Length: 358
Image 1 (cartoon, one colour):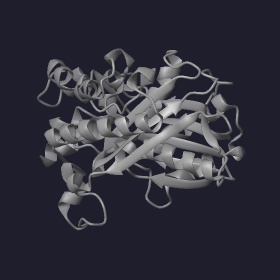
Image 2 (image 1 turned 60 degrees about the horizontal axis):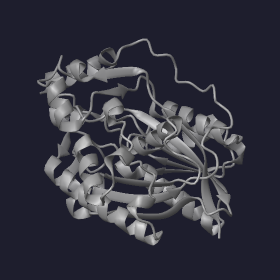
Image 3 (image 1 turned 135 degrees about the horizontal axis):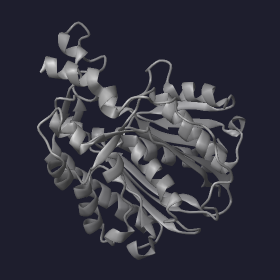
């Protein structure tokens, strides 16, 4: 049986930082209000295109695996904030990397996009259809934000992460995954006026808006992720005591605490970086994986548990057994274009537009 080992990993985090105090300069909020409800202290704001972040994260993952881009035979890109719908953004990344032998697929399952991609890529390797797959997850969600809405604007930020998975006979990589969707609650997280179902002749189309039912999302997220975690642990004949680290979707600290309690795992085993980046949707898990390795929280042979939920309401969980290597083979010099603005300066036109609209 083929397995799919994670052999490379990389992240791309934009340099511009938007703090809670920055948000308080243009909306009725405070650092205390945001921190006590979400655990978020700051988030990053992208100054370029989403594909720029994806390319940097991918180059770093390829370098960590010591692969030439031409060796990749499939790119799976999880995001809901792509550069364009046509062509798909995975094809833009393929071209920029020089991964000329790779098929290129966009996956839009919101915050679960990376986990869905890892599940799909692993199973394609197991069937023998592919051998080396690049899985990317990230968002440029600040571009789609209604900056007059405190309930959503304080939560989200931008970043991107990527991993390389390769065929192996060793029992490592994604050992079990469960993915699903509670579509009866699909409108609990919704960008309400973007897409072909909405009139392009309406003035409202110029202003992106959100529906966000926080209590419903919290309840569904904790329940679905906890059940999926239980299922994948049972599949692998593991218990929470066998798990070295949990790398969950970084939605907010309250959800992470509730998930740990419901699954019955020590909070010290849960990797948390939501305070630095906020909710970056499909970017949270791959960036957290990269930082877990940077901080030496993952060791060879460790079992890592991951879980996510997102708009749809999509959900998923996975058990990963790490391989022998926890350090990159080489580094990449890939970087974003220079940024000469603060986060507030980048956002100023958007903030003004929504203030005038509201």
